[in-house]
Image (cartoon, rainbow, N blue to C red; front, side, top):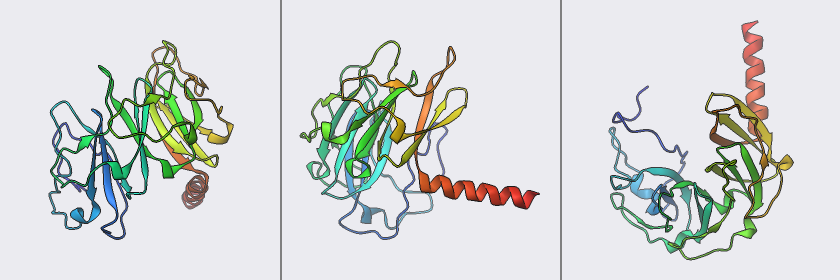
Amino acid sequence: VNLLPLQPDEKITSMIPIKDYNDDEYLFMATKRGVVKKTRLSEYANIRKNGLAAINLRDDDKLIEVKMAKDEDEAMLFTKFGQAIRFRISDARNTGRVSMGVKGMTLADSDDVIAMQLCSQGDALMIVSRGGLGKCTKMEEFTCQHRGGKGVKCYKITEKTGNVIGVKAVTKDDELMLINTDGIIIRISVAETALLSRITSGVKLINLKEGEEVASIAKVRKEDLVYDEAISAEEEESQE
């Protein structure tokens, strides 16, 4: 059913399950131009049927990620050119729903933020490029900085790798799904992926034909996969 009236050029960015609207929890948002915004979760407790404004965006900007966070959390922003910055959520002041937010990262010309993750989501980072290469890098290799800086290099971009397409905070028990531009999906284990330092390109994760690129990545926990496979088995039995 139609849950939210969207304009022709609008898309859903994030979906977050919520039990209670606590004052010590925030919706923490990141945009492609490096802006971050922290607003108390309680400000979204009473949402009208046609929705509420969550962030005020400039014409050349768009919302790319939203997480539920607390002041003690740390966030990381990642760019398509392989830069990353880690900072405390408390560095961003709390602002109202219709504000623009504050600078989270200073970007180089033509660079964009493509992912935002919380450090509490894992102990390593899975970084994947458009060319199908990727790696795991320990979270501890990224020191906490002040919000608004240029960050540090997290991935070595080459003609072979292409730009970074996605980053996920992971543990060794997680698995990752990669989908290419032709709609082919593969599943890989984080535990079997090369653990490499910050300024490297990684290894081949998916075989791509000429003209193909990695379009998107998604993190899946093993227990979720077991549950999904059990559901699929039940559906097959019912069809028989």
